[in-house]
Length: 73
Image (cartoon, rainbow, N blue to C red; front, side, top):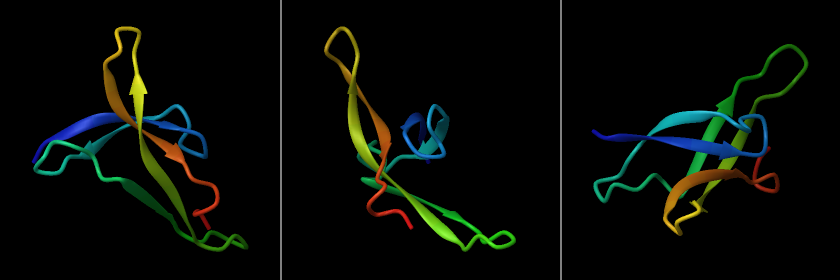
């Protein structure tokens, strides 16, 4: 299965680049969920990132994930 290095914008993963598995059409999933287990007094949460296009100077794009604060929790 193929993967692509995908950047994250916003939230706790801001600035990170992680390998994301691609679908048979060579696109990453529309929504990427990151479960964070409970630790001490903090409850377990799920971070939600949504796929968005990131354009370069030549007008070409690649996928990135943007943090969705409203859906996380």
